[in-house]
Image (cartoon, rainbow, N blue to C red; front, top):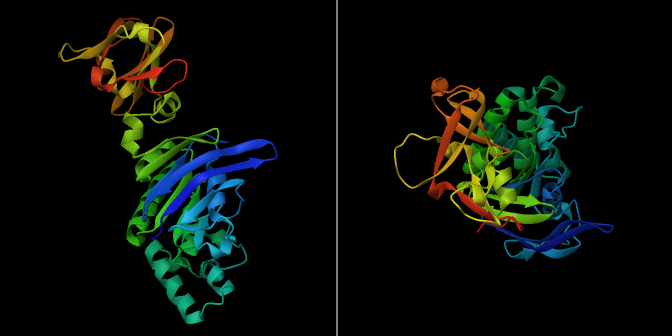
Length: 337
């Protein structure tokens, strides 16, 4: 296992800043996700850690040793790409063994490592096949196998599930988490999918515009977002935002954030809560819960119910949410207050 420390790392292309003085501390054996929209700098930071991109300033440390100037091959880091990057003319076993053969490792050790990785990933029956004969999920497992046979100090993954269909993505993220726990290896996982990050990660680094917005455990990021951007990016459906004057008299200069799953039709059960009144515009069935789109002033607010049978579009509706579940943001800066 290894720790990774990012110290004031900046990266620019010409005059365009991509990373703006990032600081991160990743612990031994931790699973960390870099999460954010396209163009936020998450893949660039990953490639800087791997050594595929040079940093403009700052430093990157592994177990306290500065690796900023080391060549990629000297960092003992494995990288799994989004597009698998398998050699199409090589069998699965040769793809997995390629890096070890390049390092001139003894053939007996290579065979042992390939056997170990293929058993761990359930690839034993595919070792003699060519990549073109495999499904997308199988190719991704081969790419992971090729990465781990070298016993790397850390495993970096750049959106490895984005080319898979929805059902296969769910199965593969379970496999990746199981693998990480068995190997006790430090993993950095780049994704724009907040559900993936929530399910897989010990901690999530939320990025936007090359700046780290928040770095914390998944439920802390969800329940205690550092700012409006984090609150809106994490959670599906997106958090509702309303002027403070519309909710409980919080006054000007404040935005009130309420997650749809915390907001439901009032049932008179009591307890400290905030209430909103509006007109039901749309009912959206979504399996075990149903989303209610309610027009409050000029704003559509999304709430949830488990029993939509009593509701009809056009009716007046009172919604409530526990007061402890709301978030307040500064309207000017977006910071949570």
